[in-house]
Length: 294
Image (cartoon, rainbow, N blue to C red; front, top):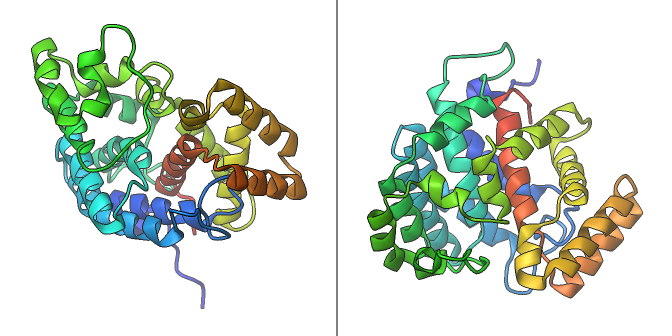
């Protein structure tokens, strides 16, 4: 008997997004991240599993055509309620518009999976509204998120103000796409502004790899970390540390022993390249949507 196929055609976009969140912590080693090999002192793999379950209703809303901001806020609220902490805020910021884009092109296929493209994602971003931006700020009421200081002239729009920033959003009539376009230096915001360029690039790396999918995801994580400084590391630890982590990942790439050593060193130092994990999770979703099988 042949094993059942498990490509995008047998799973909804919301189900693929949940699977991507679960594969994120099933993949190892991902240097500095919580994964199947190790926890952090205050963050364990079960928190991420619970967060993926809790985010599901928001992801289903995105797939059903709900406004992106509303779906994101609901996904974050569910994540926080089930996990009790912030596990996947950044991943959800990338996944929600991608889920909406994938749902919009359901029924279309390139022969292997749904024909989700950067243009589809860019169209969803371009259609966001002021109401979506308000819901984005409401999401910060549910969890603590490490963010940089706002650019000059944007103190009133500091994400750390949460819902208190909504009057300024409405006064300036800023859409969610416009808010994120002004978030200079944030890796996830960059994806929104560039049609998820690096996300789709990394999805191709995963799709073109060989071996079990979690192993391909782990290799794609190291490759991405070697190519791009992690913005969470820069926010929490400074630019010198972020540059050093990228350089070490570049040196370790392709060498399992060096990757394992980098992983141990980052965990010991409390350095977590979380923005890279967000992007690779989104890339995993894209790869699943485009026909990569588990």
